[in-house]
Figure 1 (cartoon, rainbow, N blue to C red):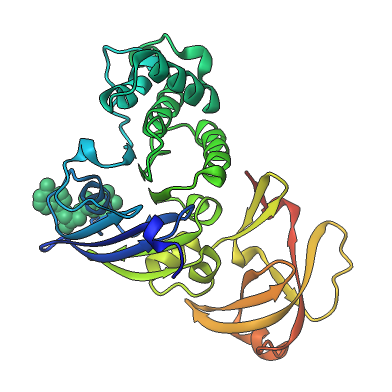
Figure 2: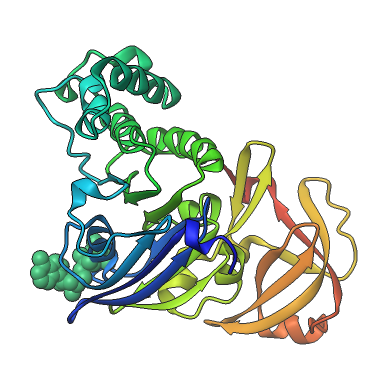
Length: 321
Ligand SMILES: Nc1ncnc2c1ncn2[C@@H]1O[C@H](COP(=O)(O)OP(=O)(O)OP(=O)(O)O)[C@@H](O)[C@H]1O
């Protein structure tokens, strides 16, 4: 794979908890998903050097194996933020560059820039105790980005935030990640994160990677019930918004539906696989979509690979982000 030397290659093992090989290129956003206890946090901590692990980690051509956390070119955001309570937002963000020997004035300039980019420039003088959860998480992300890390680790960064706050932060993070040339590893329990932010979804179960692929591939061909439940969503990009709907909300027909209240897409059946009591169809077209239909409908409509179909969904079944 080209560019891997500039990206991340990790082989990590923590006996009884983790045994994975993870490869990502520059700009990749790897969403790590999996059930509770799968080893997601262990992986993030091992990459950050906060969890002793056997194996090797190469990042941007550097060997990190055995390197202490503060020397790794890694930015970390945890769910509980972990800002220094006695420092202002600005000082929290400037701390990393300062610790790396950057002059105070320059470090503060970098910190102002990162805070502004995360939409919290006006809160630079506040202490963490004077920030809302969403604001504190923006500061935590600004802090993680302040050293221009080659690897950004986000461990459930939206957990504990109000739905609206998480949605706004997700949009900003998406904009940021689109320009970020390092590797991002994002631990998430949320299908929207996996499908909208990630370039790769890595499914961890029992400490091992059981599936990796593009978000669409993993959603279309989930190899575990957990992932099927997690990523079983259609997501369409509409400008800078994402529109998501469940495969069970999709109606499949062989003629163009004339109901103007529904969104319609033509496509061709690519594959069909049992999915619980239903059949999950993969449909290729201008939008690659998945649809759950009954086995009876599959037979009656002749929904086999190559079959041209129309998919439609009611506006009310669509959630916009
Ligand atoms: N400090 C520890 N010492 C020993 N075992 C641990 C420790 N922390 C976690 N484990 C075990 O390691 C395994 C992986 O845990 P980990 O916290 O990495 O999972 P996770 O995927 O992040 O789970 P969750 O989604 O619940 O946060 C689990 O079996 C857990 O019980």
